[in-house]
View 1 (tube, rainbow, N blue to C red):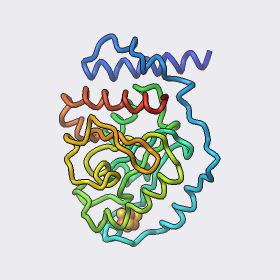
View 2 (cartoon, rainbow, N blue to C red):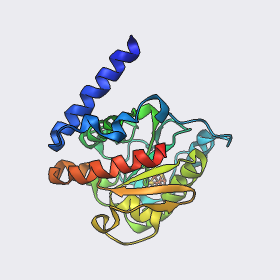
View 3 (cartoon, rainbow, N blue to C red):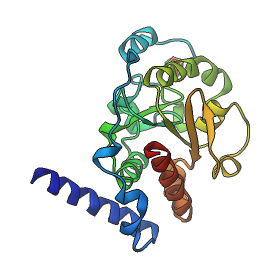
View 4 (tube, helix red, strand yellow):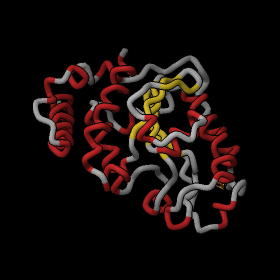
Length: 229
Ligand code: SF4
């Protein structure tokens, strides 16, 4: 019974998100129908040792962001065995306050997007390239990316996801070692290590440019079908 209620709740969330996108009749969509229990990921035999990466990070002072008003390091959250990983840019004010990535308005949209493909935040892993909040939400600077990205790369190697959704230009450029814009990068599938990478728009951008939500939805459907494939 509880499972039925859960499924109903998920369907309601899904339809709400799709209504926001202005898409009708998508509940018949093959991706959505194929979602659910079978989308849950199977633990790999690899040792999952995120705590040791977090311990190595420590009370990090490797870049100047540690002196620029961060309240805490925002390491990452979710299933250490996730088949699907989301990588964003850096914590904002809400994330800095709570120590959890993607919990502000953009985070709430990301949560809806995850639920729209039949998953929950607990089933995926969410992290940022940069673990400390840049002041005033400015863009991360190259020295900060260089200092922090090794920890993201270790998270990816440890979690060993099948699919990575790169949210926004910084995440895509960091993983793919390119300077291309996100508009040019999205719409194609790339690889990073053993993962397939889907670049898409950052949820914060989608809040400012809702007409791009439809593209993001296409990207997420592609990610889900790669996950299931
Ligand atoms: S942003 Fe990364 S490298 Fe810089 S202080 Fe924070 S954890 Fe360390």
